[in-house]
Length: 119
Image (cartoon, rainbow, N blue to C red; front, side, top):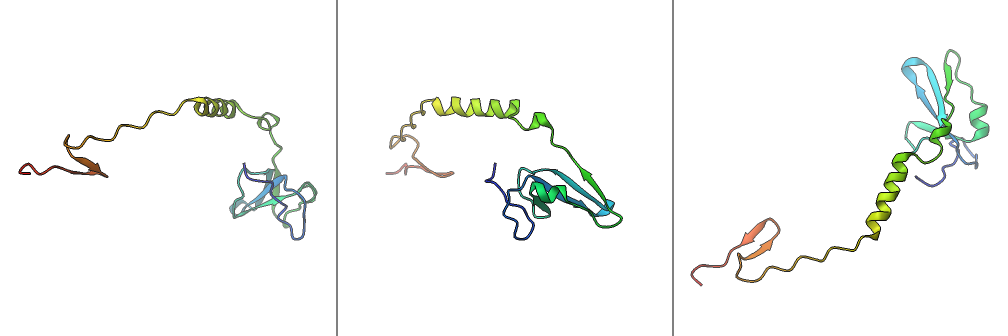
């Protein structure tokens, strides 16, 4: 996850805890848990600014509460961590032996240089 993000409000030094997104077609402002990544068309807000948020006249504000189960690591996260630890503990495979001259030529990229049969 990225380092802690700050509130998008001008001169606010606090850490962001929520993400605000506008759905212009529905005249709706959606305020939910902090997004995993900062998006260019959304705004990260601190706790104070997210609590005081009001939408323009005629707009609706939808506040999405964070899922408590989603706050901790998921089974996928734990499995990925276990796989990474397992992979890091494996011994590296030995490098393949270089080709012996005269056995089909040397390989360079996707092309093969063949020895001259008349030489």
